[in-house]
Length: 197
Image 1: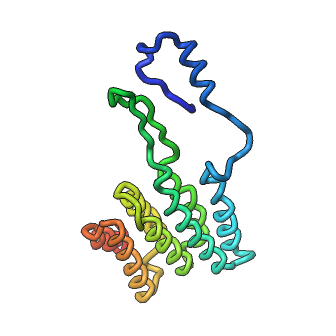
Image 2: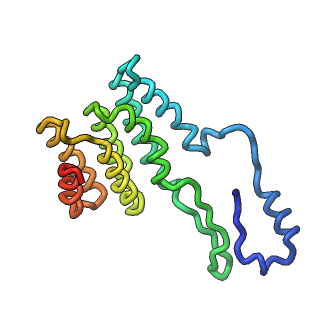
C-alpha cells in the first residue's frame, strides 16, 4: 500500500481523487540510492556478514563496516521521522511514515548479531554504533536505540564470558544508557541479563 485516504466521504469524486493521487506518485523499477537508505547501506551489511563468515574470519573489516553503519544511521535518523501535513485549518491531511527506525536497526544488525556476537570486538562495534546513532537525535530515536540494545544483549551468553569481558560490556552499555537518558534503567537491565532473565 502506498497511500491510505481517510474521510473519503468528503471527497467529491473518488475518480477525481484517484486521478490526482496517481499524478503525484511515480513508481519505477530502479532503487534510488539517495532516497532509499536501506539500499545504500545494504552493501555495508553484506560486507560485514561476509567478513564474519568462518571461511574469511575478518572481524576487523566487519568492525569497520559496523562503525560506518552507525555514522550513516545517525545522520539518517531525522529523515525517517513521520512527516505530517496540515490544511489551512491545521487539520491533519497527510501523514507520511516510512520505515520505522526500530525496523531499520533490526534490518541492519540482525545478521551481524547472528554471525558475530561471540566476538567481543564485533559486540563492541555494535554498541559503539548505537551510541553514535543516539548522539544528536531526539528522545524517540534514543528510546528505540535503547530498546534495540536489549535485543542485542539478549543474544549474549554471559555465562561464557570472562569477568573482564563482562565488565567491558557493562561499561559500553552504561555509556549507551547515559547517551539515551536511560541511566535509571541501566542496573535493572544489566542485572537481568547477567542473571539470565
